[in-house]
Amino acid sequence: MCVEGDGCEIEGCSSSDEVRTLSGSMSPALNSSPDLHPCKPGHKFRAALLRCRSPAAAAGILSFGNVLNYMDRYTVAGVLLDIQRHYDVSDSRIGLLQTVFICSFMVAAPIFGYLGDRFNRKVILSCGIFFWSIVTLSSSFISKEYYWLFVLSRGLVGIGESSYSSISPTIIGDLFTNNSRTMMLSVFYLAIPLGSGLGYILGSSAKVAAGDWHWALRVRASPNNTRGGLFHSSPNHIPIKQSQSQLITSVAWKAKQIPRHETGSVDRSYVFSSLASSAVSFATGAFGMWIPVYLVRAQEVQKTVEVCTKEICSSKDSLIFGAITCVTGLLGVVIGAATTRLCRQKTERADPLVCAVSMLGSAIFICLIFVVAKKSIIGAYVCIFIGETLLFLNWAITADILMFVVIPTRRATAVAFQSFTSHLLGDAGSPYLIGLISDALQQSYATSALWRFLSLGYALMLCPFIIVLGGMFFLATALFFLDDREKAEKQRPPLTL
Image (cartoon, rainbow, N blue to C red; front, side, top):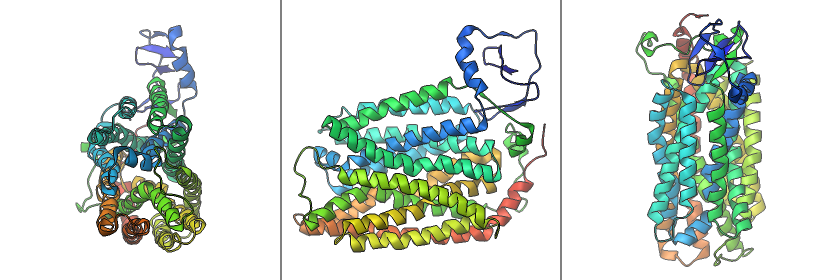
């Protein structure tokens, strides 16, 4: 038996069930009370959803939402050349779009993390989704004289998206443990490359179909509103079996009841893995914004395409890059999860070690992109495919490292601050920095197509070095991982069934 928010009794919960809510609270099932009344017919839809409630269903909804989240984020990158021509701005100024988005995202993330640990998470998620959907739609009507307003709108979208990215992983982390949590987080973080790739494809396809790049933003607003309605109409209660309650013994623990490390030491695994995530964010932010542009300039140098002088430029490279990102995201997350499970049988430090090896391998193939792009676009795409696959191996594993070393009631805050630091040191500045370096290098050769290509390539060469640094941080994480995991386990209070 479950009790809805208005005091009516809904069928679908057994007397032995515990009830978990998306706000983070958990309580044993309630006995029937004479004060309760049967639910009215208007509640049948919610009751039907309630019968389907399960940790797996909740994880599926959150993962689908994350796909739409990253689709929205990278739709702009899919039509970047058109936006640059429309507003007539330089590389550095067009790079501001992603920088402003990420800066607002990371400033808002700790706030939503704090709220997610204390208030109803479902309400926060729904409000954030509706907010950035409205802003995305409105930004498509901004005229070319107001580029600063378009940049500001991307900042507002970042605030809305931070509510989702800060809270969703913690709900999954609360519902699963060990290998099952690794698998569910792998599915959830599969949305990062999958949604990013679909964003390129959707943006490019909508632009071509409508003959206007503004429709790429307008098409994106509708799925967001549907997703917000899905979260808002979903039931609050998610029952779990008694055996599953060990995953979080009581999410209603008060922070003051959680003991700190007896030594007062900092969680070093969390710090180093956050720095490694910053390196990943730096590379993915720069690549996501600039690689399609770089490939177009490479083909201009090879004279296989002409310099775009039309209102609508070719979208072939954005479509191909988007498709590659989708496939490599799927392969990377699946291979990462499987490799980690196998390596855990050999060493308990498997999680950070797999991340370190994949990062170092990725740096090699990303370097090769800039070596072969001038002569062979196909060769560049092969290097992109392998490099991205290795880079995407660590998405879900990094989240799982956090779940191992951070106690449950601090996970939303920990995810939010990790998001903050990774964006602050990573993709908040990388797109703008790459554009700034490119502009500086091509100042004396502005009319040369070759130098425009080379200057952007030289700027992007910064990324492999940052990726190697990230691999070093993952190796440092491996040194302290076991000690920090043990400390987190000791801080868990006894079960309160």
